[in-house]
Length: 234
Image (cartoon, rainbow, N blue to C red; front, side):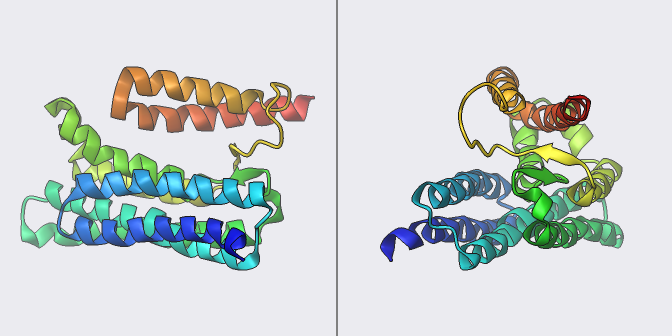
């Protein structure tokens, strides 16, 4: 009984991070919210990994995982984007322009519902996973805080943030197969794209720090496209 609930306990850790992150984001403590997303990503990885390791997967665990992801990787990123948009709007008459940030939450819900009911996504993803989207949005306040004003001017820009909201909302539900870091075995053959992605990720993080996160997402999509092309040609 205890063994079966270990993955669910980790999922609840993800949800707890999301709930606290939402509160902190509404208080405009965006850096703390972003850190909580990072911690939640660890919980999210571990719950699935431990569930498979212990053979403790269950329908309840799957539903709980999606509900936790909706809060942490759906609602919380939308609030962070909303707060960034509010910073970019010069007067109260334009605050309505920040509301489209919540489209991210809507499309995250659609993405999670599709994932739970799409048998094609057992070994890969179709559309950007909600954790990847959350990681991208969480990187923005971190970049603003740690990088030069050049990047701040690009990020704290109403038009740029609205465009990002539209692009990432579409990316969540687009019909594009993407690599999933789910290893059935750890040999090179059959996992080439996964190992390349991990290697590139480590190099980019070491050299670009938080700027690496948007770059990693671009590499992830391009590598997935290349892997799909090679798979069709094989």
